[in-house]
Image (cartoon, rainbow, N blue to C red; front, side):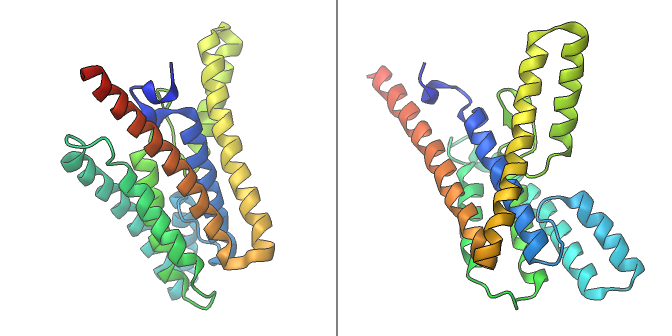
Length: 232
């Protein structure tokens, strides 16, 4: 069976791994280039926000608070689109990827002098949109913009396999460990490339978004065409 014949194309492992690579890449980008703020890791941002409040660092407070709120807004936006658009189109998830592509393209062209509170919130917005629109891989819930949950599930499944020898648990563990590796790989690649390209490094993430989105669209189109041919 061709990949496009999968009834849940958005859950394909290669798509999930590609998106998770992007998540790690952008988090490392904002952490290095934008004052230690994480575009997607809101647990870290809440800690940083609390420290900034205690230290009375107003610019830091504004940046972290705006980033957290933007992330929340991204989740809300996708749920609204899902409710209104999903019944009429299989392509509704592409809105999140298109938005991400536009934001990454713009951010890469901004000089480092642009305040962090104008850069990290838009990235947090599209990171939230990405992880909300694509929240399942091979039938398993996951997160493609941070890794704590994935690492927990990988370890839990591996432990369950060690105790029960259930091969399904081993497969589940492998999926989640691959996600952790993809996230770390994206972060490492981002950190390395920033040594040469600085703020423009995020354009690499935009390129990966194009690849993942193009692959996803291609599969959706082929499935739609195949379904239409079967009707005729």
